[in-house]
Structures are given as C-alpha cells and as structure tokens.
Image (cartoon, rainbow, N blue to C red):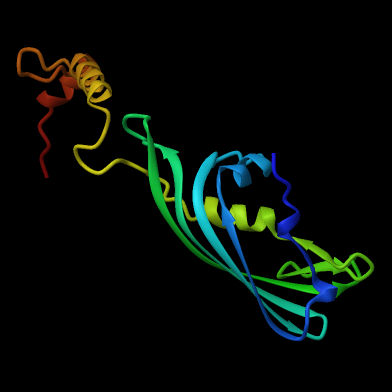
Length: 175
C-alpha cells in the first residue's frame, strides 16, 4: 500500500509566491486513505499554493472519474468529478480558534492535505448516481420490474385501495 507522504507539504520550505504541485490519484490513494465512500477512481489533482509570509492559500483543482454503485441496478459506474476548493493555512500557535484558517505548528510546519483532497472529491459526488438510460444491468432491471409489479397489485388493471381510505370516497364536501 503506497504512502500518503506526497500529500504532506512542508510549508516552511515553500518559497514566497506561487508553488504548483500535481498529483495523480488512483485506487491506491483511496485504499491508503481508507476512504469510506469512494473505493476507486482515476483523478488528477493540481495543488496551487500562494505563500505570503506565514499565510498560505491552497487551491485544489481535481478532475477525473470515481467508481460508485448505480442507485438503480447496483452495478459499478464511472462518475465524472470536477472540484475546485480552497484552504487557508498559517504557521503559528496551534491553539488558534479560527475555523476558516488551519493553523499548523510552526515547529513542525507540515500540512497533510490528503484528507482535504479526499473530502473535496467525496462532496462533489452527486447524491443520486444512475447509469444513462438503457445502460443499467438488464437482469437487475427485470428483477426490479417483477417486484414492483407484484407490490403494486396491478394484475387486473385496477389499483388496490386501502380499506381505511375507501370510506372517504363516499364523503361529499360542500362549501
């Protein structure tokens, strides 16, 4: 299992101005980070770091595809992903209470962005992921059709009405 060392950035050694780092993210990245939602994918991430004194603005742009299960047929499908996220960090006292800025100990000076990159990817996955029409597993679609027909009670063309609601049909509403 590969190490996530390439996602640890030594902020103290970065020069003033802009630094660009590029990383390819594959199945090994998701396995190493022990990702709960995404297990595989092929993505490319560009990390642009702007340093001004002890403040760092990190821009993370990631694009590619991740493999997720289809919500309908449960077969794996490739979901295109494109993210643009921003993180602000500073070197200083680790007791800082500012939620918008990550404070990195000045003694250590190392910022691990692996989990930030993963969260950026996971949050960009749509809530509903479904194959294009006609691309779902045909065997699973037949099973789903059989179960939904049996549940709906459409054998004789009429929908079954719950007896508790049937009495409401006889009520007349007058104004």
